[in-house]
Length: 241
Image (tube, rainbow, N blue to C red):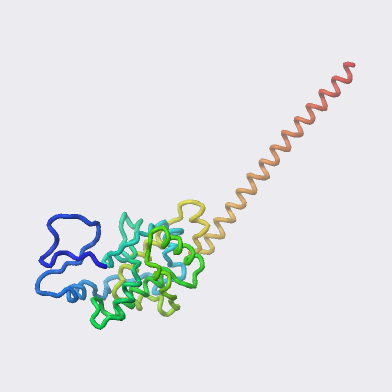
């Protein structure tokens, strides 16, 4: 489940749109995979914990970040399109299969952490995420096992619990935090700042009520003028007779 370049280097011709995993020199494929997927500690997060709002559904519904499903694990959690798209590797069944092998291609720690990233993005105890994911599975023919990766407790939602995908999670979280809602639907779903959320919707409610009562007052005024005009016409007609 990885885009592997030729053993002697990168392909001379062809374009797949996926990030390749270079396999060159005297190394075996297992060694090449081990050299590519290493712990990352280059970036420092602003907040040490990933909140419960950090799910794939909320990335899309709140942050406006498109989820692009991939079968290339090298692209997992990679942002593209000016931070508007994130790749997600959904073949959790393949990862679980690796755990049962005597000589797996991927290290046990790497597989476990990758499964934890899926549990982070698709928590089973989140009803909204579960319903949304079932729709995605049916529409995009995803691995159904991606919906059965479990949940993460508060302690395991900290960046320090991630080594291989740490930097990509930090970048993705930053893109999510910096995103602004575009449209009423995203504003409604955006509960990252409860004070801002209530302030916005109270302002919308006040504005709507102001428009409503202003319209009612205008209609009432027009109706009064019309009734007065009708009464005047009736009185004038009576005087003429």
